[in-house]
Image (cartoon, helix red, strand yellow):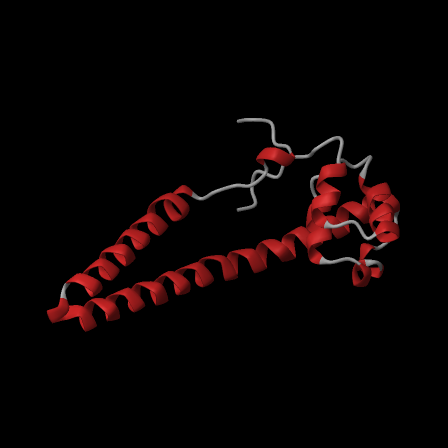
Length: 145
């Protein structure tokens, strides 16, 4: 497996991103084509196109809603634990000044960088992307989807 860093940290789920969505896009394209070219059944094809859009939206929302909420809770707990172990201070006391995106970006920082990066983020209000770019010793997260 490649060493993870800022350039390659985004992860894809092939059955979803490279099978399901292309098939749905193909079905949507076919239904639009026949909506415009099959005058006798255009309403039926239009309904099929709208149904494809609804199914795609529902699939996206359901797939990600539960998994991401659970992952977000785990990331927050992991960062609270790491910060406490490293500093003997509770991250919860600082969380009202940090977005979840900032907290999630901290997970890529090494233990040596984390406390200073949290303080720098509080002082400079770094964006999650700026946090990631400033990490010198990148710690991979191969489990987040």
